[in-house]
Image (cartoon, rainbow, N blue to C red; front, side, top):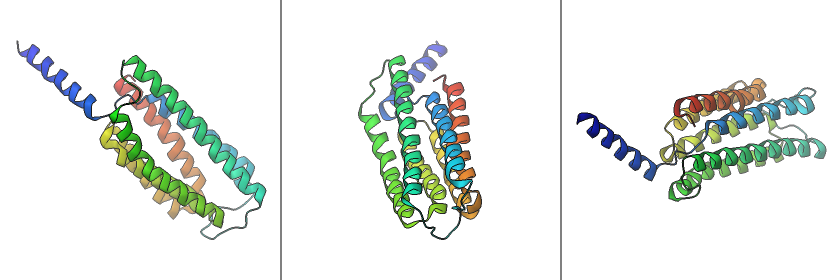
Length: 204
């Protein structure tokens, strides 16, 4: 009898959780975005940072070609990461027989996109002004804040990931000469490990 009560309570908690949080995030989304981020950082280093000292506090002179390459790498990494995240998330919602778009998804995206959009515009303005060295820090901090802001509508683990990204972003500013490396750790390695842990913890 006691087991039945416990089971009923767990079912009620599960229903309440599903009604207030988006819980269909796939751990494979984190793994894939981490891999793409590492690839993007490697390409950026080989084509741009290896031969030029952009990781300074001052503005640097950028040619149209260099700026175009930076934007292409950034947008390419972002696009493939978003596509992979959507793919694995949709696959997870189908597996759980849940709707891919509902009120929880909408709340999650709104709270995620507001800091991301602000951070993206700020990063673009810095790039246009030549402050390339600050980009790793800014993108990490705003990404972390976006995760923290959205965590109340999704898995609680996202909050911890967001705080880690914020700390790494601040570290990237303090150690600006290692900005790209710290960016690769934050967006790449940390995301990858987070995805594996989520996959194992929730079997997502």
